Length: 572
Image (tube, helix red, strand yellow):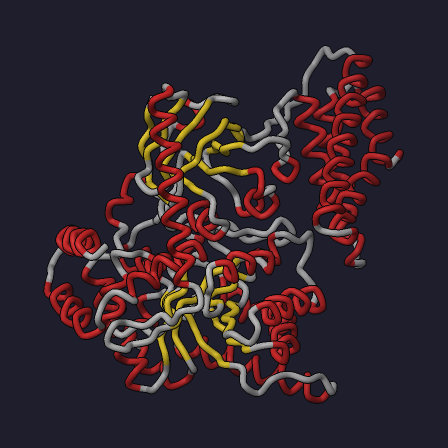
């Protein structure tokens, strides 16, 4: 059986499937229960959970270190706490409650108590209780528990979608590929698969219903074709495809250490997008000339509470030192929309992508913002730091964010804490309003970075995760290209450089246009860097300027896309 989706991350994957179910757990009170049976279900679930957590703790200790494994030590303490498990047992005995319902009631009570405490350490324990309880409940109900951080075999993950926490905690060495029901080229799963250099297909619609655990899968992350339990001929065909893909990757190795420069001498910067300091390995392996986007939200999403200044400082320092004085663009906190925190409650919004998020939240919660800025400036002495604000839609927001930076620098100076005076301040252009007033904004920053993922979404009024209207989400839309040209022209008129950190920056069909429009820096998934360099090294800037002029005369995204697909094919 063949499934067709959207090729999200290149490469050939061959292996067995592991289906990750994301069923919502519904807990109800049951009548006529057998108390002894419920106590046994609870006891068995606790023991299985204890065994699983112990294995994960040891694995994390060996691979990441003692400190990182402590979170799982805390989880074991919850299971061994006689007050917690003992209270669940009492509710089963005294109130004749089914095990999952009793556990849910006790969990809610303990979480409420811990979250109301002033002590930050005790507040963090609430998250531990939630995590442990979720695991035990699934075992009580007989729901499959898949711990992505402790995979035993090499697998192709099949899911409705993969959350940021899924991709952050999974054992990347054991994952051969991703297949998801939903998503597009700019969905979280697609972006992370490219960052992690894991082949992926998204938007398959019914992968989780068509594919079963241990089904044998072969798929091509470029074409979007996946085959379930194929015959031997198809398996051999894909083995040959995989060999050819690996050979092409080897040929790209020859480009390492070379400049990203056109035949007529136009040099650009090819940087990479990362989510954690651990992603540096991919950048270094692919010869990135800098970090064009460090998404700091993962530091927050992988924590049980807001990371403190020291924790953030260590993460930023690690990235700056790891890049050996190459430029590092670190984006300030971009939480909201589809990126939530378990420990911070966002109010329900009709349109969360247009709501309380990113710089809007930071300017409202200056305590959170200042903590991050202090960590950034403290780390600035360890490399070439560029700070970037997301989701700016007005000059007022930009000026206020810069004002807070000055306040932080003043505080650090008074405390005798060192920081660099060479930190560049920039902003993302991802809101059409910002693109339109980019001539004004350019007077107040050192650089722009165009975030095409959201710029396309907001310009075209298309939810990029909505499968029904995904055809309208198109980087070749003439309005998007004209906005990009406007931003680059306005920036250059003020003498500042312009980068792009959206997925378009690494698209081989888009790079020639961007070169012609004058883009200075391209930041992409590490896996795309060397292919982008090969293309840039093979063309002339003068020809790309002519090409972009022709493209801007075209009136439909379809015409532009077909033209560029043909151009790329003819220039391989």
